[in-house]
Length: 280
Image (cartoon, rainbow, N blue to C red; front, side, top):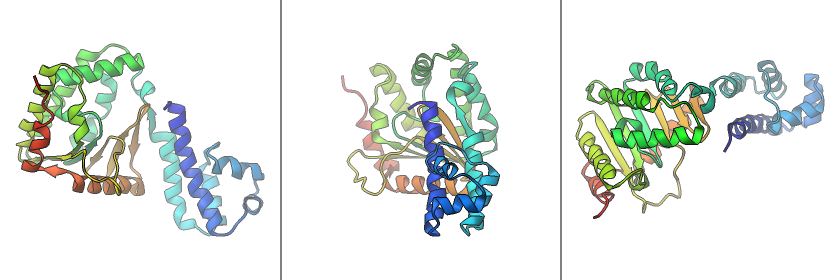
């Protein structure tokens, strides 16, 4: 998925919310346009995600639909789309280190971390070799400047936060993430051993969701982090999405709770980790 298609999807989601408000009040697009003093085509463009409404547009829309109480949330949603949706290629235009450094203040200020990983192990758990393989893959795919060594050591430095007993980490992984081969047998053995080591830390909880667990109510989603349950960071193919809007963060809180319940923890997770060790 391209950066532009991700942005379009976010606009479509907002347009759907506004369309729902209009329809719930039984107001036609023509009537809404007349009330707001717009051409009817503007309603269509907004509802279909072809145009991002201004704060004033959203305010008028909410008032016309008798939904003024929802205006602030919708305005915040639009601002998230416009301001907080940061393209990877913009963030990484000077190399991968910039993306890492931008998140440093947030990590320093957070006491309770929650993370979900579908395919790759989270950076906080990665060994040097695993991190090198991940960063090299990103660098090649995105054709960003080569600052791999610098970025890798910055990531290794961040892992020291795990030794801070005042902070709490709850990490949920899909079992599949343990099996994806990012290197040779020695690399994977070292990486899986690292997970076992960190799982023994008193301030770290690692849950593994078995591949065999029923997923009718909660299926795998995109990788994300929650910082003190007040901000979410979501990784897509083309962008890092930062969410601060309360209703959106709540969705990821709920997703994490559901995923956490599916996972095996402590000694119950150990067989899943051991089962991922590559055979001779």
